[in-house]
Amino acid sequence: MEVLFKEELTQKSISDFPQTRYQGSKYKLLSWIWKNIKFLDFESAADLFGGTGAVSYLFKIQNKSVTYNDLLNSNFHSGVALIENSEKKVDDFEIQNIFNRENNGFNIISKNFKGIYYTDVENAWLDRIIQNIYYYFEDEFYKKSLLFWALFQACIIKRPFNLFHRKNLYMRLNDVDRTFGNKTTWDKPFEEYFLRFIRQANRAVFDNGKTCRAYQNEVLNLNNNFDLVYIDTPYISAKGVGIDYFHFYHFLEGICDYYNWQDRIDYSKKHHPLKSQYNRWVDKNQILSAFNELIDHFKNSYIVISYRSDGIPSIEQLQKLLKKFKKNCKLMVYENYKYVLSKNHNSHEILLIGWD
Image (cartoon, rainbow, N blue to C red):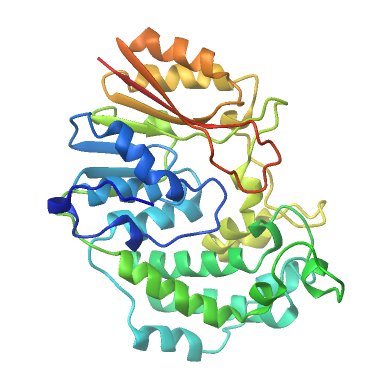
């Protein structure tokens, strides 16, 4: 794919951003997004629902002052590690310390997730490594986030569907003919993946000379003084079913709150998720009013919205809403994009751009 970046600004390129199997990542669309918004004259940008941080990284390599935001604690660590962090990296000696230190007595994953996501050996490894990250890096903000990011990617890649939405370890362990997934990938040791991903994270770190920050806030609690805001909310299908990232990645959220984790588990469900939290961004009855409040709050900024053509609210509703606050509204369509795990082949990626 052609990378459409200004040569004189690229201390890093988008190829330095580590790819992830996290659902909803815009990594493959970054060139297309930049091609369609580079006519806007802006110096500061806020990625309001930051997710993997791919779009924030796009802005960072374009030498913008970037604000990354996401309500999930695990995603916040991604923003800290790859966007706010400008120089800290984890060296081999520090990684060996993590590997060599024994478990200090906590077995939260082994006790609460036996037979759910990983094998007993893998659960014990996770318990030990997580505790050692806390032990050695509690006061090393950026390095801790880098290590968490690498651990999250290792956890994701070893999961069928790359999610934590059901108890399905059996899909890995059953000796059957397979038409889905990659057992070789699932069964590679955690340590191998962890080392691979920490090297990728290290390689992504750079300083663009601008102030870049990561936050974990409700979007309406953010300042509204950005030149541009990028909006990529959770998808709600035409049937009214929203993608709840808190539910899909609750296991990663638990890692971020390891010593309080078991007090937050919903044991009534087989896969032991965290107790649910209300999210208006996946509520089909609240989503339109939420968009209205959001665009109103940032009405003095350029507005860029990534969206799917078959979502709730409709494209027509979003266009009408955007035109209420902006003199100009541009609609771009990327027609041949394939969504992971989606069976709807009639859905297209949309970019809505509003400016005065």
